[in-house]
Length: 436
Ligand code: NDP
Image (tube, rainbow, N blue to C red):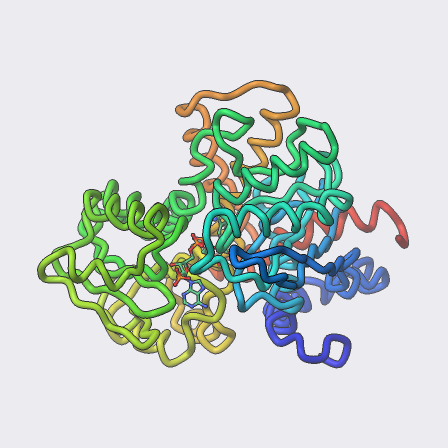
């Protein structure tokens, strides 16, 4: 806290990891002596820059952009770019820190980074968004590269924004390389990248349920968010025989007791992504559904499984208790750090199946890693091969969590498992490099 004043999200993320790592390191002097945890919790560098752009009325607007390069011990920095008014240096530092462990868990050679801006894309015209993305890349391009740092999308940054940024990178450098992931299929993107995070979070959930001899068939699911991760998680739950009851956005949530079917999910995707609409419109479109406004969150709706897929700290201790009281048996995080520390402690104490985002939402960055491989080799893999690789990678992450998180008596602390497995790989690489 003293080293990072005012950076609450970052301190929260480091605290959560430290709780597990201290126990793991207790009898391992080499990590202590080398101050490894302190070194991982100090980003390699934080780049902050001005992003100046002109709106449609000719006004000059000034925003702040960042790239946090946390750790490149096991591969080039890798992590998304977020455009949202809530973005601060603290938020990006927490995300880059978490990303370091997540990327290590995938088994692929990727370091951890994150970037973004406090720019609010809501209500902006396509031209304004394009000018902003171009200006953002005009500074960012000098800090990234296919073997240096490979950003991707995140909240507020989808295929369209990646296109604007990649176009500007290419224009400035005259290089067509895999410097960004989440690209369009015609220009170096990978099949199933869009679906990978949401699908992966559900595969992870499936793996957890399997340890109890259970499955998603007939289970009710409460999901928050209605963006990329939430809609694809919903799609996979439905495909595996579950029933999705809710979706949300920053204004509130919709509850559809009849279930949010594939047809309805397609409507949400079209509405949120292409029409840039609000989730409240869902209740006007589909009979039987209700909208709960004022920023309400869906955790009070009774369910078997929950998937927080919107943003950080969207599920607190009280809400965790409510989920448990209503019979929720498993939580798989699609978002990054959606459950606050209180909530994490409550899920852990109740010994339910609880997967932290760094394990369960790693499917997206894993397929980004596969996009990098395809770009380097200048080839495109088939969809069936990628689907299988995603399934295998999520299974691999799950077994790494079991290795370090299982108590041998039927309970797995997935938070501990993910933290230790991710930490060990990065820490051992750092030890090999000496004091750098
Ligand atoms: P999108 O921008 O596609 O969707 C974000 C969703 O979350 C929207 O429904 C948005 O609502 C809602 N949301 C955003 N901020 C808030 C807030 N402060 N309060 C309540 N709701 C909010 O982003 P993604 O689906 O890509 O990302 C969602 C989460 O998943 C993030 O935590 C991200 O870091 C994480 N993630 C994403 C990956 C990916 O591949 N895309 C990979 C791994 C993790 P509204 O429209 O009102 O803003």
